[in-house]
Image (cartoon, rainbow, N blue to C red):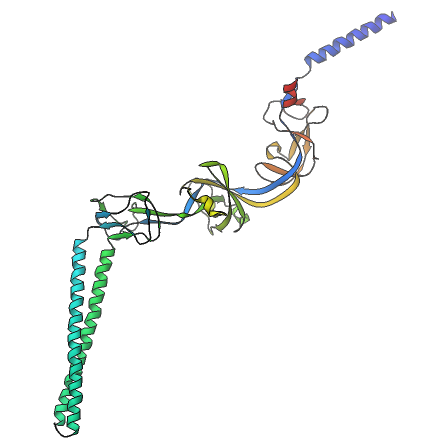
Length: 382
């Protein structure tokens, strides 16, 4: 009887064990990270895409309006400082300038004549005064000669002033001519031209934006301008190291540094308030060939620590908790004390040790404290 009871109990135990085995929860396959030491940086990134800018860029228009008579460049052309890029029809102004130059030449001729006569009159007055002193001529004649010399000298002075007036008229005529010409203020590349030969070019009146005739950029000197959130701006200082990434070159990272933080906040409708930060390339030669207007992202390095315990930032849950995998495979929530952090890594000051296993697959259903899990690589090997 006793033996039969023991057999029955053993049979029940086997059935129960088999029932647990076949009904046990299936372990969840998760990605696992083993905690280790490494470098952690505190960084800031721009809120909206920045862009490559030129150190010099100017949008040129003629001061006066008129029909385009000469267009000496095409879009993409390299130009030198002082090179004539565009000229309007100006035959009327050229004629006026020629008249002014002729008047200047005439004024100089008259002044030369008047001053020559004045010099001769002064010599004659001196001669008459010498003769009067010796009694060869009357004193009245000497006085008359001196008066004549003064009058001639006054005429000479007036004629010289007429030269100044004529020079001013020539300068004004040339200024009018310059209003019809666009010259390059610096060496650069023509980015855009609005207008063709024979078309009418109109300068932009006050308060009315008009496309410039020529957009000129200096692509030998480039920098990055990026908008930073106004809350982050106080942490950014000139000279801080920066990493620059461009959509056009996804596999390259350019080193740079902050050269300027705007002293004002930019407020755009329906967008966050930002502060523009300007960044220089540490190696300007690396920026050669980049196009003005490329979108760019800036990551400002605030602080860095080497050889600290770190975990992927994505593994950190609300309340600074992570899911740790103990030896029995049952997930356990562990509170940690974070330090420096960025979008990739977070420093762990307390709560974990090197070699601890934490879960990265937080998005999987059922991944929570108490769940039974296995590492993906281990699950694949079974």
